[in-house]
Image (cartoon, rainbow, N blue to C red; front, side, top):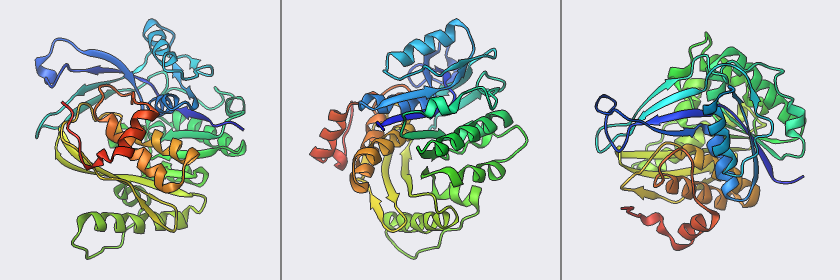
Length: 345
């Protein structure tokens, strides 16, 4: 079986305010596309992995433009289905200094939110693939999307694929009558790799980390995450790897980034990155997840987390949702030890 990865989710039209202007002062918006699972597929395609993105779109010119964009990224879209009336939208105002970024979602009744179980032949999709990836955003969109996603996850397990989930909790999206606490636990028995923060594990799954009296903040964060992840994996023994990132927000345009992978026994720490001049933070988590999948398909755990964090670091220097970096660029940063800090002008 080849290293073929399937991702499933909603692709949205992204409308961004130019430069660092505010919504209230602009009369133009920049059009691009994005969505967590698509961003992961594009990252993997950049690294030479055969990847496929599955979604549902309306039949109109905007959707065709979107499909054309995806095809240029060498991502397979042969199982995309059509129906409904509109793509989901999100509007982005990028922050600067102490003013944070703002996102406004417009996804209600989108074509993807109205997807239903049985619309996609998942056994056909999964044939010849090794990995399936989804995020917690899909179940948040609607009851039918949640059911369709669970159908896909079960098909992935039935066909022997590794399953990864980015919990990616978005409180503002859960509007269809069930909460994230009621829905997401049902997905976890089917997952092998989970990206979740300590806060996610506490809020959604009721896991309380042990407190550690350690002066070093980084050591304390890692110890508390290990405590939470260990409890989570005891509840869901099928989960083989837990990953997360720690972000220090000095300002909207200056962050510090670090990440860890936990295999149930040992914590593997990634490098420390200082990002003093962020170009676009959107998609940084997806670049990390794409790096995790590539890393676990090709490397040991330590190199996998190093690779994933470096991929995320580089995404912060690139405009748009997609991480447009190559393997050579990631390997160069890792080899040269640039994690000590780089300033991009």
